[in-house]
Amino acid sequence: MQGGRRVGWLPVTRIPEHPATLDPEALRGEFPILHQAAKGHPLVYLDNAATTQKPRRVIDAVSRYYERDNANVHRASHTLAARATAAFEAARARAARFLGAADPGEILFTRGTTEAINLLAHAWGGSQLGPGDVILLTAMEHHSNLVP
Image 1 (cartoon, rainbow, N blue to C red):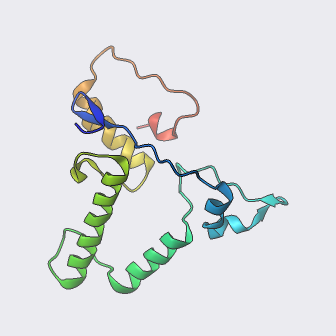
Image 2: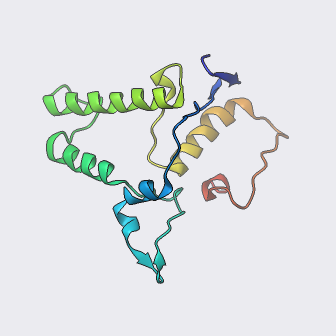
């Protein structure tokens, strides 16, 4: 596997190093919601497991999608569905390249952290863990790790 290894059947891919430095203030400037204050201080949002704030380019892209291409992906053959499916698969391929995945099929999109953790628990955990195995978590982990 390119740039990674396998644990059981689950591929573990190393994220490529990027030589460019990140300017935190420039990045913050791309998020319209962070242009406000909370309790007299610049808003800081750290609850990204619940929902992630969107940069302007994402807000604009979602708006364009709803205006032009809103349709289910992989569910129909009409023009809008074909465009939506092509955009969806292009996003998967782009994420795969960014993460260094060997194949875009390694990239799964979920609705959020809870769904992703449940998918992993049932798909991987069900086949890899047995009686007496222990999974250690800290109090800082996402709540869906702790409840069914």
